Image (cartoon, rainbow, N blue to C red; front, side, top):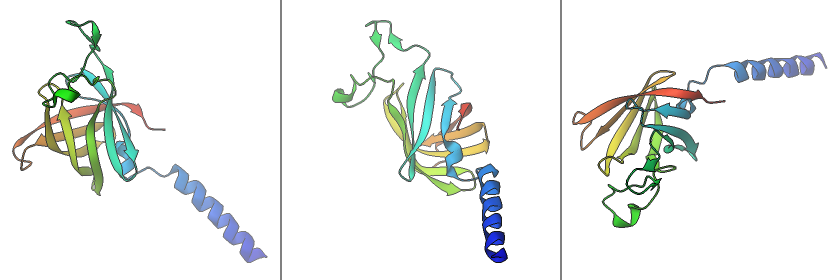
Length: 152
């Protein structure tokens, strides 16, 4: 009986410790982030085993020309040019590789309608280095994103 009580107590303490341990896995990416230009906010979430990011806020959500919500007017696919930017999934298919890096995903740039290969590196809990590129990572550009909402 004492052995069983010890095992139960140990299990409880271990579970309690584990619940307060810092998250060092891929889910640290989850949250709301702001690109350096400040024109949008992107909510990154996990769907299945991959990470995706959608636009949840725009500095200028209304197109001044049409007085309607902004759409993906620069998309090369005419059928997608009428899709609203709010809610648009611009980060797709990222997997956590360890060492504060998510890769094998893409980023969509609504300003020019292009999709790029992308790597995300977390430099600290509140800063991401997002590198979009064509072909090889050396041929790309890095943007720094800041966390706005901490995942609960």
